[in-house]
Image (cartoon, rainbow, N blue to C red; front, side, top):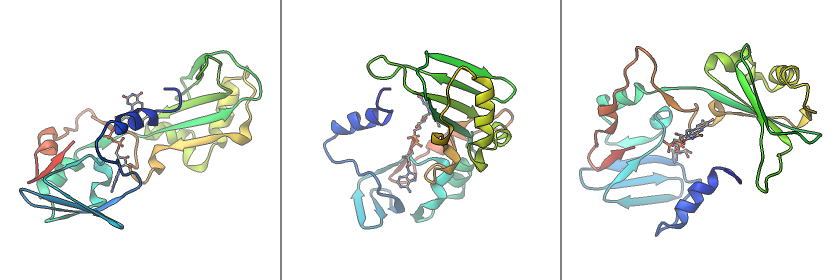
Length: 202
Ligand SMILES: Cc1cc2nc3c(=O)[nH]c(=O)nc-3n(C[C@H](O)[C@H](O)[C@H](O)COP(=O)(O)OP(=O)(O)OC[C@H]3O[C@@H](n4cnc5c(N)ncnc54)[C@H](O)[C@@H]3O)c2cc1C
């Protein structure tokens, strides 16, 4: 999406009757069968119900009062998460739209048109799975991945000093990429969506 996926959320938010509060981290949720109060630094919101949508990876950072039942915590622990990262590298020269995959190094890269139809002066790369991130040395920075990218795309004039890595594991509000279902490990879908008094789970 031109301008970034955030534009989708912003457009939806504009149609809501009340303001959407961003940068308001919830630290505590008090709940009964009929009401809830959500609290964070400098704010408190009470209502008839709360829909909890935080990733399972960070649920334990929120204090629930009374505490959540062990069955609910177990259901959240049954959700597995995948790992992913992107490398964006500015280009010194114009490029055509393209996409190339490196099978041995488990990443792919692309150049693409942006708003107005012109090819954006950047090559993006994506890699997924903990093993692939480790093999590309993502935690240590862009160095190794850049070397592999330069080898894979000698047709592009990389401006390596402007390279930016986005590693979803580093996002403290998610700490992973997306939830996955692993072969041989059952996710407790029923336990996940079971309401807890006036708390609902999405
Ligand atoms: C690299 C990548 C590419 C993807 N590509 C696509 C795609 O092309 N198409 C597609 O459909 N999906 C895609 N997805 C998946 C999509 O992004 C997710 O399915 C979707 O964002 C999940 O939405 P969510 O609301 O469940 O969780 P999230 O989007 O993770 O939202 C959870 C929110 O909770 C917030 N939060 C956490 N803790 C607190 C707290 N204590 N207080 C307040 N807020 C808190 C976080 O900041 C976050 O904003 C992609 C995901 C990744 C990682």
